[in-house]
Amino acid sequence: MYYDVIEAQIMGELCFSVRFADGLTGNVKILPSYLYGVFEKLKNPDFFKQIKVTDGFVSWGDDEIDLAPDSMYQAIAENGEWLLS
Image 1 (cartoon, rainbow, N blue to C red):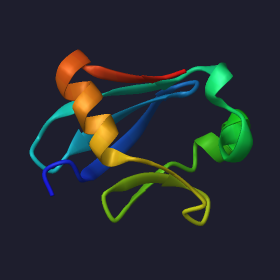
Image 2 (cartoon, one colour; image 1 turned 90 degrees about the vertical axis):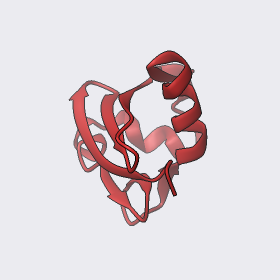
Image 3 (cartoon, helix red, strand yellow; image 1 turned 45 degrees about the horizontal axis):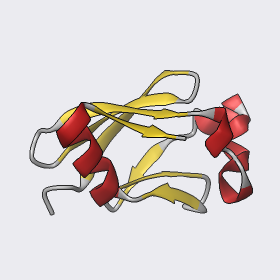
Image 4 (cartoon, rainbow, N blue to C red; image 1 turned 30 degrees about the horizontal axis):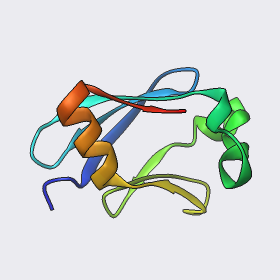
């Protein structure tokens, strides 16, 4: 689909850039307040750096954490970035 992520690169602490299948690019920023529950593991910088793209999703670990590409796409198309707070 057009909202499949094909590339993700770490930009800094809790921030990364993405490129979608249709060429749209943007940044994702995760605020510390978002890091609870399953996302708490992303507090560990070494774990966060293990970002990867799996089947159009941005994910970490053994695909135990992933982010919805359709929501990410919509926010980036509208605002240039997706802020998770």
